[in-house]
Image (tube, rainbow, N blue to C red; front, side):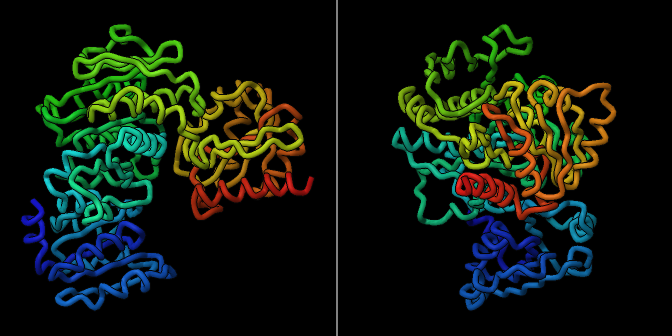
Amino acid sequence: MILETKNYLKNKNILVVGLGKSGISVIKNLASLPVSVFGIDNDSCIDIESNLAEIKKTKGFKLEIRLDEKINEDIDIIKGVDLVVISPGVSNDIDIIKEADKRRIPVWSEIEFAWKLMSDQSKKKTIGITGTNGKTTVVTLIEKILLKAGREAIVCGNIGNPLINTIDRRYSEDTIRVIEISSFQLERIYSFKPHVAVVLNITNDHMDRHHTMDNYADIKFKIFSNLDRFDWGIFNIDDILIDKKLQEKKYHSDSNLNIIKYSFKKPRQHASDTSDNFIHYKDNNIYYKIKGNTGKIDISKINLVGEHNILNIMACLGSAKIFDVDDASIEKAVKNFKTLEHRIEFIEIIKNIRCFNDSKATNPDSTIKALSSFKKEVTLILGGKDKEMDFNMLLPYLSDTVLNLILIGETKNKILNLIKKQKKIDYDVYPCDCLKEAVDKGFEVTKPGNVFLLSPACASFDMFKDYKDRGEKFKNLILERKNNG
């Protein structure tokens, strides 16, 4: 397959759209072949010369770069192009991608490109994780479990380490790749076929790109499209949309792949349970029956908070068991696993106020899960970039847990108008113009003994570089309060 792909790529004109980590990694991997590459990005200010200086000198390799804020509208670029490789952040709706589709020029995601360059043996050691929320937590915990069991493992994909970066000689054929995969990456896969595929949950997100929930769910289920009877699909059947799609056979209908279902309910208590392989929770233990083997792991002393994280642990257990990891290794890794940054991350207690950073909550469902971890004690900072999401689902949870609601960002007025339509609310609302003002207001209105939480339910790009930037700025503002007494 590798040789076949390299022969296909030889002497081709390849357009790489988007020059972030994925795009640069694709170009570097093409440098060993006699190809012509044209890399483009609509951010005219990015600095990529240092990343590409060495490969520009490669014999037989031609490279041209163009940075222009209107580059995505220039359909003349497509003339003479044999293949387009698209980065995850690039929309399918831009003019040059539409033109490529019109001319039937192949368009691959970076995930698809990397997959075609992997050996057959390496492909058998892959776990693909998708879902709206919890992907990074799950891939990171699976890696910890595998390492604890003495296996070689590497996390890659949407987590910031492109899959293409892991196919060099640093990694042996025994390395298990745990791949975080977004819906954006799944849009343009054709042969991608992880040995284990997991869908964690499907909730309202990215409607500005996917338009409907049904379309969004179908894209998520593309992760199963090439799986066969030697592969495994792991499904959270407590998620209504996943359970519905599973019953509709919204995956390859002829695949006969092995299925593991997981749920808070026991097997046969769930209406759709027809699987011989099942994982469920009871009394601080997670029980499993997989490949004819049964067992349990104790999660009474874990550091992770919330029911959603118990479901995440079930997904990790299922993935690990397919690779025959023992219960003790799973239990130890889960027990020692700490909450990741920006995910209901405890910061500090200041004036007896417990402060948490949940900046990774970029959709309403993430914020609902965060609020479900607390009582009626929360001052919540909410709002950010508008992704055309429905915030109505969030309103009952605000009533259950929030005492003070602080609104910021592009969605501030949209959420405020929804709240004004409510007949009665039992929390105070404070619109603020910036994060600093929001933090100041938070400390002003939060009573000792209560919780101050950033969980925006929105993307960050209206005011920040990304969710990490937003979270770091929030933490710094909190710690300034501590340092100032």
